[in-house]
Image (cartoon, rainbow, N blue to C red):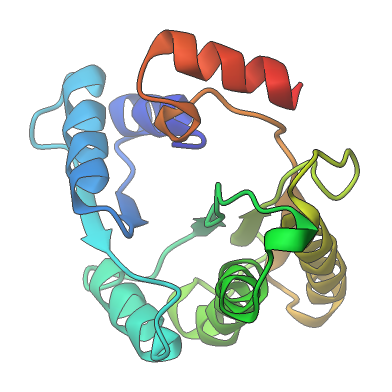
Length: 197
């Protein structure tokens, strides 16, 4: 999970509220338990949600998610890390796969931005951060669609930085991060990280 260590530090030292959402309920439960355990505060304000972004009713699901997250007040920061580890060569690509990737990389982020002003504090100190990959700038074999969509996300966020004031909007490209998405074992993650480096 991106920024996982930062979440633990923030919860432990600054008593912030953290909400985590993913399509995988067990990953959400593990992340919430891990943050509470490692920050040393069993009753820390960490909550988990599940959401399926490729669904056709994405906007309704996002609105429900954001309503749940902000039940105790608006948020200061939203970090969107949704992506896919799906790898397909151009020859293997099909319409359904391309549309699912577009849903994750472009549709869900745009709908998040549409809804964000209702749920984020309207302040120069509030921000909306999108995480992209280096695939756009440093192509990797068999990920042409993801590279194209990452480039589209960067262009979209560049426009948002102007249009969403006073909210700050930015994109970060952390490169390959060693998370459970890269493999179940340390050895699998190491091989994947070497491949993506």
